[in-house]
Length: 419
Image (cartoon, rainbow, N blue to C red; front, side, top):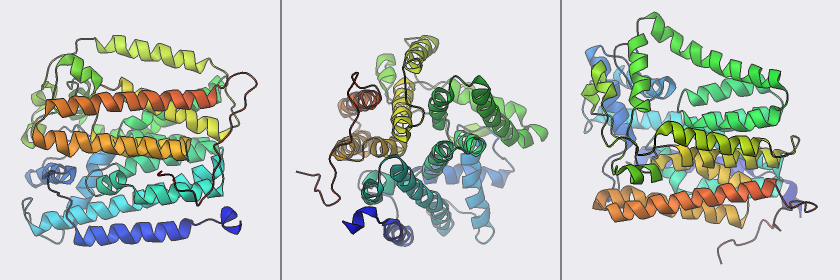
């Protein structure tokens, strides 16, 4: 059929952007159970500038520089035309929409990259299907206008796309930008190292570029005397109590990763405060265990010329990262969802995403609003099982039985995947 070889990306993007612009102008992201979104926190932190306090200069931050200063940029532009105000002010409403507009640029870029990656690894039909599915999913739609995740996803997908087409230096730069927005994209280094092996020089060069870009981003803050505040910012995350993961259940921590209220950002000693119980299992032992698992996977044979194998391995690395991490936030699902769909652009991927969507909603806002430890435990357990399942499916797709070639599931664009 003709439509099988024709891209529908323009139509998908047009409807995708129109829907989100309409929401941006006419809708405030507070619902029945969620009275608070991350944009409000970003705004309050950005307001420290009114006191002459700037993150990584004379204030610490639990967020990395690119995320912190994206919010700061939106605040500076807003304050250039409007007076200061609280969360109930028109100033905040403009700030939130400006930040949402910036995130929409990244979100649209992510959709384009998803389509390209799916087309490269699979075919045009699956790329179109993935675009339509992603464009109508509720979790990416909500968190686009409630938290900074669109920029993290964009840089991660850009790094993957550039790596697959051989632009490795650019890929390393994009990955560094992603890491300096949120640490999670570091998982991609595991896939890159496996694909470049045994070319140690190429691995070292890629890693060196990542480190240089990270150093260049921190350098201006060091020059103006922000070294102690950078150290405090890193310490606030390294010493953070476990939250919303299996490790948090073991440690007896039922919080959401508290690091102190906004005024604490101006006091160095507050960065090291731990709001929760210390780990029962030392973090170094967990790291060694996951490192050993990675080395075992690293030694398994793989096809270095297959985009599908690369995406499956990336998905496996992301699942291992989430399982290793001592913390979890619901908005991180916006990074898991695209890789689930890229790895399995069929009924399996759709059901994985729908199950994750249900677990996210169960965790937040439902369990949080009802103050229900039981619901939170169900969400954590279900999410852990789902990530293990996704990782196993990804591994099985790469390492099939001898003589059995991996075959994509039968696909028709007009299939209805919900029975």
